[in-house]
Structures are given as structure tokens and as C-alpha cells.
Length: 186
Image (cartoon, rainbow, N blue to C red):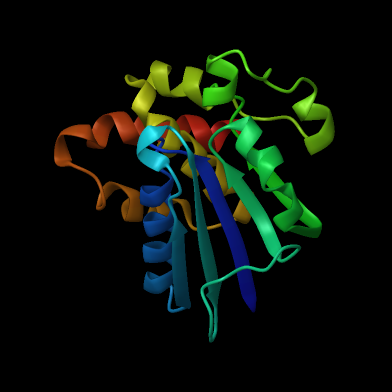
């Protein structure tokens, strides 16, 4: 791998920051240089969270330019659409079909956009349902990490280990199941 630029996006509380740290940990353990940069916005109020993860032999900057992401990992489908301009030509979008209503939609000032799947041009993963099947809706990020692992062709055992060593011990079994379900769904 010469260089891999992954943009991880979602809504505050979905575990996007954990996901970026797991990806970074895996890449470091594989001997790559890694740079991360987080943009939180109004994350604590349900706003957008965006994390740049750059992996390669030698990475100088943590920032991914617009049109420079090899892959967008989105934990919510509107967030995938919102950051689609970061995807490079021929890049991949891997997104959860979950819909979290932004404040303008909640207040009635706007409507949640229709036809997002058509714009993204690919099917999403029902990470929320798979997480519930694994035991907790909060494991949707582990579902998406399993899907990411498979999509990028990473070593499953090592990537799962990076995840499991980054979470509380009491959630390990649930996250293992969520990871496996995401891996199978990819």
C-alpha cells in the first residue's frame, strides 16, 4: 500500500472517533505511518463529525483535500452525501443506511433529502439492525469497521484485535459479533 486516504464521517455519538483510532492503530501495527485529524463541529449536539485518516509509507499532513479520499466511511447516509465531494474519482463509499434527523428537519424547517442512495450510487449497510442483532445499537460502529476491514482486504484477525483492544472489556463479545456481522455484510 503506497497511500490510503479514508474520510470517516457521522453524527456526534456514533463512534466515528473510535473508528478512526482503531484504523490508525491497525495501520501502525502493520508498520505504516499514520496521521489523523478530527473535526468535531457541534458533535455533542448531534452535529457532523469528520475524521481524516491518512496511511502510507511517509505521510506529511493529516488533511485530505477535496477529491482526495480513496474511501468514505459514513455512519449515517446524509453524512455520506454531505462529504461526497471529498471522494476521488474511482473511490469507494461505504455507508450505513441509518437516518439521524438533523435539527432543521426535527424543527420542521427542512426535510430529510430523498434519493440519497441514488446519488451515492451504491447500496448501504443496515448497520443499526445488525448492531441490534449483535446486542446493542451502539455497536453500529463495529459493524461498519467489520465492513471496512473486508472492503479494504485487511487482515481480519489483526483488525478485529485493534478494535477489541480499544473498547471496554465488558463490550468485547457484543463488538466481536457486530464486527463479524459487518464483515459478512460488506
